[in-house]
Length: 147
Image (cartoon, rainbow, N blue to C red; front, side):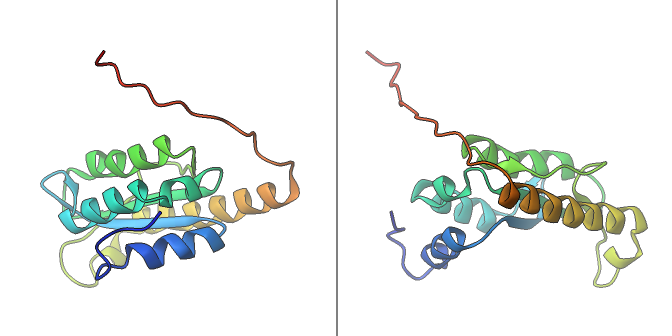
């Protein structure tokens, strides 16, 4: 249940995930994908138990980019969430904001609206979950297809 690399913040984040109501992660886009450090973090976080703690919690991945590749990076983060039974918070467009230099993202008015919408939708989902019935109890069996 813990990452063997104790010098990285994975174990602390797993502990925090157990206590939180939702999760937003963000990454810059590099070569149409998430940053390597984010990929390494997510691999460790989801492998050592953080993914199980995401189940039935609202989650959102957001990306910051200069021009293109944001959709690929956004989907890359969502793959982790999908495999964890997490509740992916929707918005009215891809969860991306554009800018290259400091301060430029604040000029992307549509991107700002998307981020604000994600925040409102996440708050609403958290309230619904807190007011509603318990989530379903699903069991998973892993199968090795090599016989």
